[in-house]
Length: 328
Image (cartoon, rainbow, N blue to C red; front, side):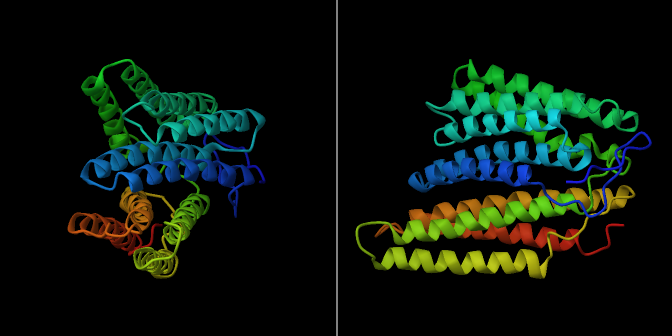
């Protein structure tokens, strides 16, 4: 990756910047964690499993989001930045190990991994303090990620309800974070090409997990049977349809230029639209596997599968609204 030119008091975007090989590696580490969570959900495909899946998925995805927004603003492929990146991948591995039981026997791994990841995000922002024009953004993110790291770490040592309260507060800070930095978005905008490319690549990888679930559905049992074939066919058709809707219809990977407050609002809508989209895709992947078992298709399970499809559809609808006007 060619480094962005260093001039002025904020980073300057390199023209035509593309995702680096490290970023692709980083995304794959996250997808492994999502696959662990989705696999656990497939084996607990009920309303309780839905709640755990939704909470854990949001906590994991906001880690990816924090790294992505930092990288698209500040990453120059420097050795110190890469060192922090490798440490973050290690934290994701710990998160992935805990994702199969994030509120039970592996809660220490899930919470500890996220605490470490948030701490590394805080350190990554502190390391960019030479950009005086981004000082306000850096201060907010450093305080935010530091507080979240403390909440996640504290939650590990507390009994169930108190632990969940700490972690719920940390997740609430994630949900509020786009508004906490809204005033700085136009001053220190993310890269208009690189950021959408990162989201598009992550979308492709998650859709790939959906296709992997099709294979798992067919492999459900010693022999092929009607339930597994039905789940595989439906899963494949939906994956194909979601790919076409995202890349051809709403063009969710299109450039996102931010030069004023209105464009900043559309950027937030665009980013938030990926939350139901990604959660829906991962939920559908779990459903493909869960519904492959004979007799698994019941009213409740069918409703949950439809819920995943509706989430993905909501995300696509919001992406269409975010892209309905030029972002410049």
